[in-house]
Length: 491
Ligand code: AMP
Image (tube, rainbow, N blue to C red):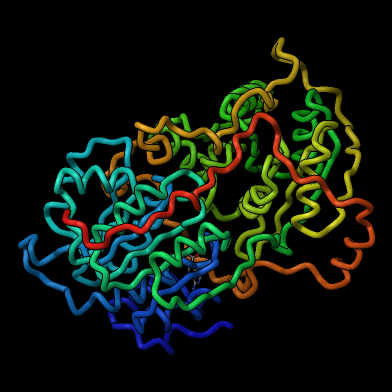
C-alpha cells in the first residue's frame, strides 16, 4: 500500500518540509498510520526503524499540534504537548533530528534530552518551552524530578522501540513517566515484536488501539544475500579479509557479541591494514558519534559493533554485514543483517560459524524457517600475519557477559544506554539521514514462500533446541512488574 503525501492534505509547512526531504510516496507504515493518528486514535504499530516510522507518527502529530503554534517567547505558551520516548541516546538523537526537519517551517519547537551529559543545556532548552520533547526515560525522570519538565499538558505520547525499552529494563521508569501524563491523550506504541510483555504494556496504557503491522520482525529483506561460512575462531579475521577481497567490498559492519571482543577485533583489523572503528556501549557518546560519522564519511572501512550500539541506526549503503560472532539471540540476527540491503540496495550478510555455534545457528534456522547452508570458504591468500599473541583476537569469550544482557545495578539508571553528548544542533555532526526514494519501502521484508516453509519442515529432522548459553542472563520477566499505576500522579 503506497500512496502520495498529497492525499493527506498536510498543512503547507509540513507538506513543504516533506517535499524538501525528497519523499515522493508514503511508506507502508506511513500510509497506514498517518490517517489513524490524524484522527487521534491510539496505535500499536509493529514496525522497525528504517521503515519510515518516525514520519509515520511525527507528521500527523505535528499536524494536530499546529493549532497550538505560537510566536510568543513566553515559555508558558510552549508547554510540552508531545513526548517521544526511545531506549537509546542515538535513536533519540536520530528521531529528534528528523522531527526538527519535519517541523522546520512551523512555529512548533522540539528538543531532545538523554543521559550522560550535563543537564544544564537541556534544562535551558526545556525552560524556554518546547512542544515536542524527545527523551530517553532515565534522563527524562531526572528532569521531571528537577521540575524542568512538566508533562501535564501532554496530548501525545510515543513509545518508540518499546520492546527494546522493556529489554533494557525501563519498564518502571516508563510506568512512572506515564503516571505524570494526563489520562486523556493519544498513545502510540511502536515495537519490533508484539511479545506478551508488549501486549501487556499496551493493555495497560493504550485505549482501543488500532493495530498496524507492516514489517514482520522475523523476516529478512530479500535484497540481502545471506552466507554462512564455517570458520574456526582463529580463521575468522582471515575469512573477513577473503570476503572483502573477493567481493570487492569497501565498507562493512562487523557484529560481535561482547564489548571486550569488539575492541579487540577492531584493534586487530586495524593492525592488519583496515581502517576500523569500534562502537559499543562503553564508548563515550562523543566517540560513538565520531565513529559513526567517520563511517558515514567513508573515512572508516569497518565498524565493529555490538547489538546495543548498532540497533536502529539508519546508515544507508552499507554493502555488507559480518557476524563475527553468531548472535546469542536469533532475533538479533534479523536486526543485524537488516543494516545492509536497505532502501532497495543489494547487501551481503556473512555469518562466520565455528564448531560451537551449532545450537545458535539452529535457532536462526528455526526463526527464519529455512535450512541454512554452511559453506566452506576458499582462501586464496596466505594467513594474515599474526599480530598478537592472543589465541583468538576479537573472539567473544563466552565467559564475558554480552552487552545486551549487562544491566546496571538497581540503584543506577541505565545511563550507559543513554550516554553523553552535546546536543545535536550544537554538535554539528551526525548528519540527518538522506531521504530515500526507493521501492524497498513498498516491501521492506519478504515473507518466506510456502515452498520454502515446506522445504524447511521437510529438512527439519529434529526440532532445534532452544536455549541460552549458561553465561547469559535470561530476559527479565517484566510481566511480573506490571502493577496498576495511579494515573495523574502529581508531578
Ligand atoms: P525511520 O524508519 O523513520 O528511521 O526512517 C528511515 C529513513 O527513511 C529515514 O532516512 C527517512 O528520512 C526515510 N524516509 C522516511 N519516510 C520516507 C518516504 N516516504 N520516502 C522515502 N524515504 C523516507
